[in-house]
Length: 364
Image (cartoon, rainbow, N blue to C red; front, side, top):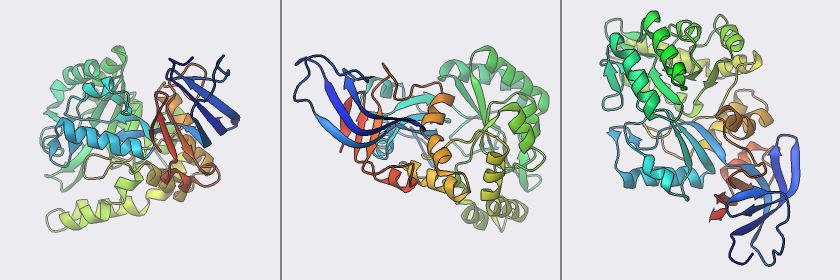
């Protein structure tokens, strides 16, 4: 065994919310619960082990101005890794980050391709900006470029009304989502306001980002259809600042943004109580810093989601939703180890003791 890469993790291995084991072994980058034959004097780490955390809304390769170079993308990915995020759903990026797949020291990324937005209805340099007649073609393009997801911009500031407004007619979005599904991709959409949600869900969308516009009328529809939300509460915290900046020119929009912010916790808790799947995402990479996954879990708890479910939203449940393995036999040995039990206090997530990626200690 001397030529093999072996690591032992002892203490409490949280293979699932109620599946606690005493140890696991990482052998050549893969998990096993069987002690390898002939192993002696291997490195051992102690603590409470979780599957590598998931940030289900994170933009590697993007900053507030648009695409960034590889050095900046690498720094972003490393910052997320140091926070314990080892699986990212990149919810839209104009940069080609495929080179990250060749690095066994960086988080694994599930890409949604580039944002697809209505002309002049999103942040400059971020998205394909198109008209509704081109939506199906662009969704097909990004479905082929991504890793099983496509990202739409469902609503944005409409300068004619001075408020948030839906970006796509119902017929075009139905056809686009159907095309994505035919190509094996799921579809998600940026949505702040109320207006676009019913059409998107009834058109067959799989997920909504932010979802601050959920109401007692649309929450049951989300629950019935199993449409997930990624609330990005650390991003929603910026709404008052954004509203202040737009007050002079768009007072109606500013008031709307403040109202969405004021009820954000109630909205998330109501969705959770109704059975809507809720997952952790930070929206890092635009105006927000990377490495905020622990902050977002804490925000979900503050909203009233029980700690074990908030933890699952970045660990077991999030990985199942994205079709990626947990701490199971034969899975990649991607895990984070803490000095204390994160089930008892999610604030423990802010201080990982060891970070193990592909069976190697990359931090600690």
